Amino acid sequence: MTSATVTAASTLSWLHSFGGTQNEAAKAAEKNRVFVVFAQKKAKKTRKIMLKEDVEYLGKKGQLLDVKAGYFRNYLLPMGKAQIITPALLKEMKVEEERIEAEKQRVKEEAQQLAVIFETVGAFKVKRKGGKGKQIFGSVTAQDLVDIIKAQLQRDVDKRIVSLPEIRETGEYIAELKLHPEVTARVRVNVFAN
Image 1: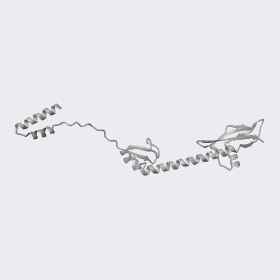
Image 2 (image 1 turned 60 degrees about the horizontal axis):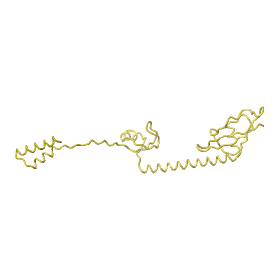
Image 3 (image 1 turned 90 degrees about the vertical axis):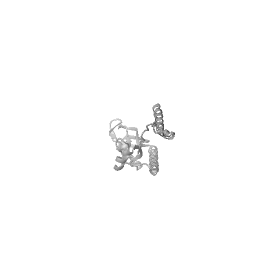
Image 4 (image 1 turned 120 degrees about the vertical axis):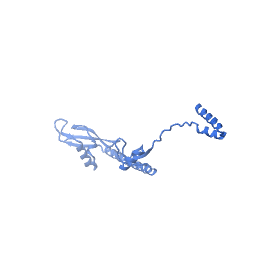
């Protein structure tokens, strides 16, 4: 700062020697001022997007993300993998989410009603050819229970949702039917020999 003041003073005396005016000396002093500029961070350019399909290392379909503008412009947009988020798109997504939630709730309620039906029926009776004592020939499988449910209740049940203990003797057993991720029906299975 002192060198700038010294330079301005020397310029002032130099102008006086040639007959320059005080005003010209002030202009010369202003030209020699030092301006300090602080560096600013470069603004990051990102875009808010929604993925239209799964993108490896980025995200899954329907996910909202912030990505760099160049990545969106040069890769995601030309490949049709993403689109920019607009208020209309957000509204559409919200409506779709509400519809999906309502559908999930409806499916869960149906599963709960079906569970109540299965649990109020009582025991499903399974006849098997008997051996010594309580032993039966063969075993009772999930497919056997599915066939009995279809015969008694006229309901189609997938055998993959039936969880049965290993049944090789007569007696009463509990089977579980996983009707929904949050709804499980417990039914009694009565196995007897004929």
